[in-house]
Length: 121
Image (cartoon, rainbow, N blue to C red; front, top):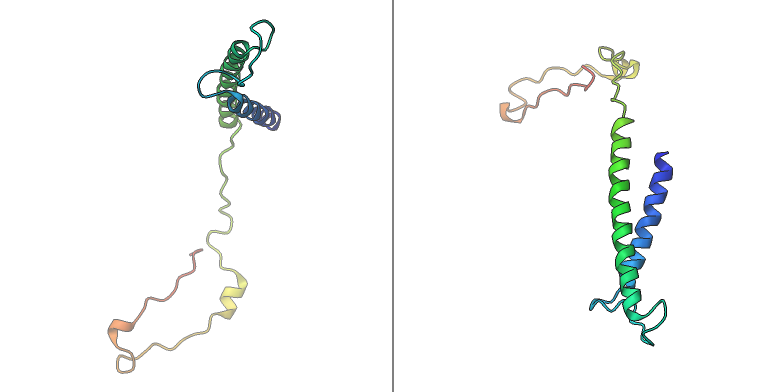
């Protein structure tokens, strides 16, 4: 359902872009000259494009609200697997060599670093 509405909204957005780009900035609409009689005169085209822009814009906004409501209602909470929380991986237990403790005479105190702790502990 959500994918279908997303496709419909994309088509509405493309149509809205096309209708907006066809309008003239002065309000002449399509810039079509000719006689004053007929369906698509300059004034008739401007009225048609203005109305279709309003309708497509309204549909886009309503569809955006509907899709946001659907996305919020179908969202499932994240599940965290805690079954491995207190266990170390077998490779970490076997591969960690034992290091001798440094003596104060060989290593200055300001250069000592804390040992690395795995994230699972």
